[in-house]
Length: 139
Image (tube, rainbow, N blue to C red; front, side, top):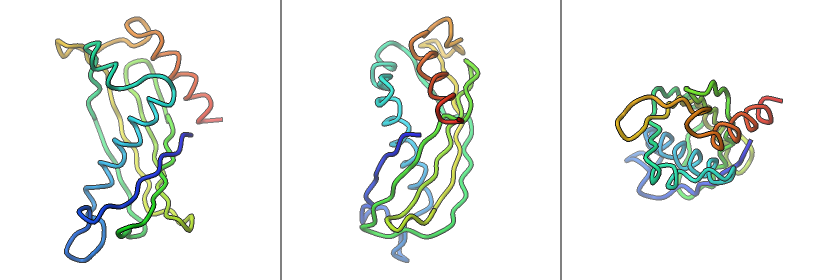
C-alpha cells in the first residue's frame, strides 16, 4: 500500500457543501499516478514512451460525506496484475480515520497504435515493479 494525501478544495464541493461524487474518481487518478511515481514508474515517462493506460472499469462505494477543507488519505493497493490488466484498490479515510469511500479501478496498457501491450514482454521494468507491489500489497 502507498498512501496519498488530498486536501479537499472548495471547488470540489456542490451546492450542499459536500464533495461532489465525481471528484473521488479524480482523486483515484491522483493517487494512482502518485503510486506509479513512488515505485519508479512515472506515468509521464510511460506516456513519453508511447504507452497509455486507459481506465477499463471503476467501482466506487461512498460511506461518509467529505467537505472543504478536509484532508483525505487514499490508501492505494495493486489488487491484481496479470501482465495485461491492472486492478487498483483504494481506501479513502478522513483525518479521524473513518473510511469515507472504497473504490476499485481496472486498467490495461496500450501502445501508440492503440494495441494492447503485453507488459512482461514490452515493459519488463514496469511488469516487475507491479508484480512485486502486487505481492507486497496482498501479503
